[in-house]
Picture 1: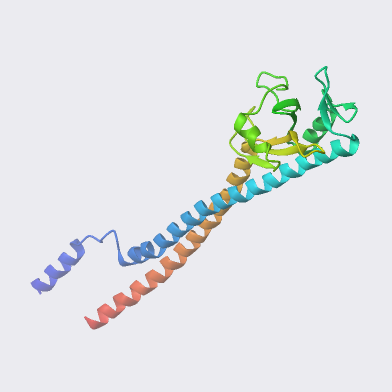
Picture 2 (picture 1 turned 180 degrees about the vertical axis):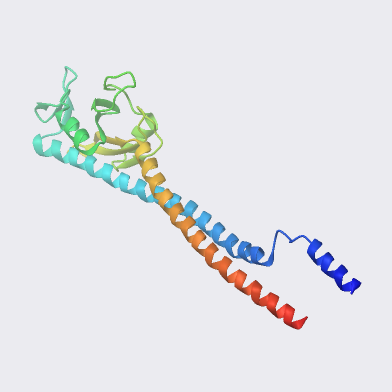
Length: 235
């Protein structure tokens, strides 16, 4: 009788381990899922950024081509600069005429500039202290790329607090590149869009993990109970 009582006292005195079998099963089941969800969120964010940047590039190019076509349809002839320094399209002076680019900026939200050579002749881009940045020049390497006659897309330029740029070359009838239409938009819009969509991905991933945790917890407890019954029966 004393031996039996001693055994019961030892069993009661034993502390229940923190990592029980059910907790171990839960951890082993959820750990791979959490890792996969983290990878999906990371890869998804990068894919979103790439996809949105591609859409932005296409949108900027569409606006650039539209401006080029509008000038071509409105005014016949090549782009030239007269003795007074004014830029003309055919016989019409376009220096200082900002109505077209201002209207596009208002409707699309994109910043638009007309460049003659590597100089911004007219632009909607502004200085931090106010006023347009007319007369500012492009970097030599950027202008050299425009001279190829192909549309150019640049990121992280941070000119006048704007980050994404597309340059649509302006080509005269002799094939010479005399300037470009510059269309730009801030990076912050892209970051905000990506942030919202990544949050949605993370919320879905967390919901999936919680549902899986609940199911695994219920199943593991059921398994442990069955194992205890089997152990008791064998004992």
